[in-house]
Length: 255
Image 1 (cartoon, rainbow, N blue to C red):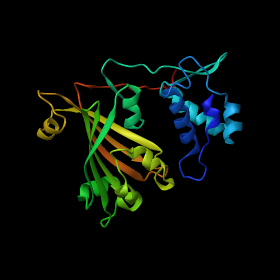
Image 2 (spheres, rainbow, N blue to C red):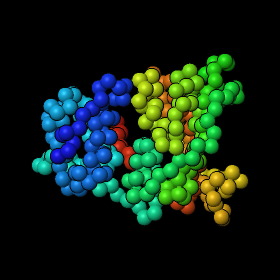
Image 3 (cartoon, rainbow, N blue to C red):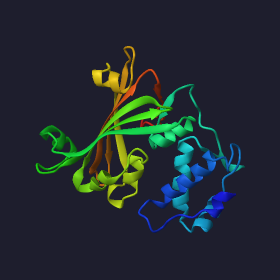
Image 4 (cartoon, one colour):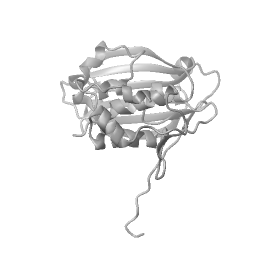
């Protein structure tokens, strides 16, 4: 199994569990570990990569929640095939590139704007910024198989995220970039979903030929200490996008 010939880069700030998760995912997507086959045991991964068991479990837990792996008491952890919807774009909290590849489509990103701005007082208040703070504004169009799917506007505090200005977002994921810096590790993302009518900008940039409802996401990503790292607005075309929400119910005190 080629996974046990790979290595983690412990000299970078990218979390080890995230590196391991990406290695396992790469092995699955390349066909080196097929559906129904087992991945190495927790102890094999611990011993080979010289990492803690909790690190291994975190990587596996995320892949299980995303549908790539399944734990079986008698058979260990096996590869499964994530459920797919016909011509649907399923959104989850994973990089856009992986979302599209998971559906056997070719991802593409077009950067429309990337600049430093002085935000209005309302946005400063919502992001917890001071009067003198600047933000980085980024506007992207993202496509699957050359079909425009979504428009995304991001607002990030310049004091923490200035490094994004020198990056090429046509080939890089904002999420993965933020997660590669210790001061911008995303701990939690809050999403508000709403419906809206298309705008003239939606019609032009998403190449809409008829009246199409829009699905709008307002995402706020924070560090562990609560600091806002990304204040984002996404507008998805409603005719090609579907969204699945998974919830783990918590027992009610009265039950």
